[in-house]
Length: 269
Image (cartoon, rainbow, N blue to C red; front, side, top):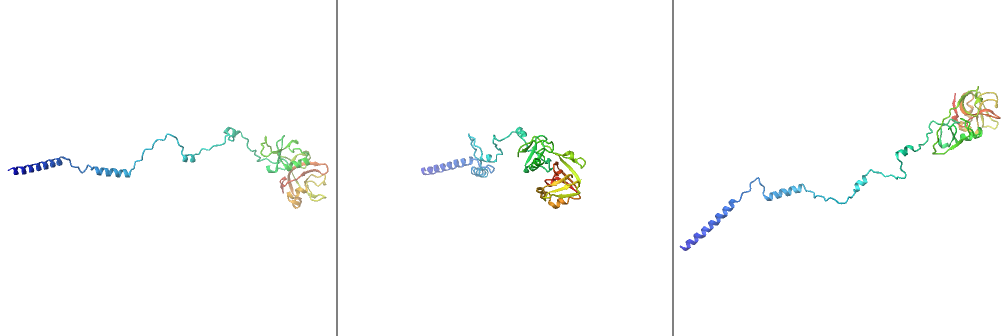
């Protein structure tokens, strides 16, 4: 009887433990399908973190450090303050003088700075250096425009007070003797061409009154080659010539215009 009671007690205790364990397991809520387990949540969070890594926040610098890239791409340019000019100063700066449209008052050639220039300070006309030499030899160094002797060398790079172009008077056989010492424009028929006794000097005659009494063009030997040589000068006989030059009355050879360069012969027909 005692043995039976002991076995019954063991069975009751076993049943009681099983009943309590089953009740505790039944009271724990089951995991619905729509609620992810902790391991799956961690897996998804880890997957998202790998796809979109977050950048650590940069600490704000306490000291400004200029970018070397910005410095290289800067368009700012610096000039030397000792040589820079303000807009108002630039507008006042002298500009290079424009010689366009101005001519040598003696020959009519367009001004060429490379040939050297002189200017009359009275009437403001210009001359090339070789024209000044001719004026000194044949016109006592006087300006053909105003008869002044104040002819000064023009310094390269200087700015003259002004410039004037000289337009010579047009003369004829009837009045040329009134324009001695001036540059004139003359047109006339050439009946005869003469050569000097020493040779290589030529006189293109506009009148047939003899060497000394006729108005003529004179070509000295130094200018013969420059204007085209002996054949060209002789070809002027029987033609009408328009010429520009200094008219003078030589004490021995009479009224003449000395031709020193080809540009002084304006027209031949």
